[in-house]
Length: 193
Image (cartoon, rainbow, N blue to C red; front, top):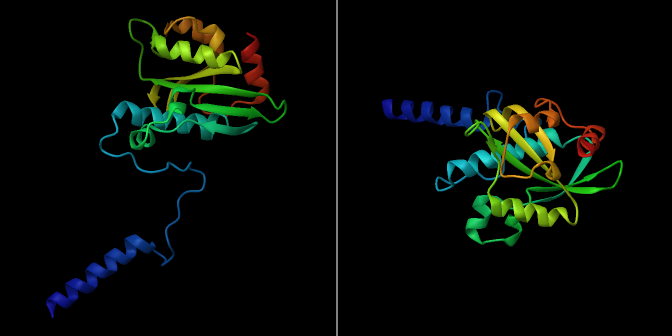
């Protein structure tokens, strides 16, 4: 008899967690971006942070006036089969009002190194410059806080980034509010600076 009671209690607990309190299936929060597959334990932490910041950039910063044209594959996807597209900037967007397409590379850094934001390697900078010959490239740099909610955010045209490390004073004119989506008007203003 006690075993039957334990089984009934265990079944009730499982039912509660699977179905929710009112017997309805639990739903994901519609306001939260779809995160995709959970990163495997073998995904390096740096790539997990990068994926989280990319999700932030795609779903919160470039959500109003822009259509997503392309997103590069994640680290986990390229581990299954390498895709050369992983070498491109993270996103290609199209401005709805102008029809103009542009790339965005997303980089999150927790802090400065030697007073600079070390945002990429030299070979990456060269690849971004190659893409820049065909379409504009912006770099979204999150600094401090968490990848899903950085303290500071900069949206910088690639032309303004001559080196792999950049001082905050160079980034300052391109700072945007990290808690608000960027408008097309703001983006094109930043491009002209």
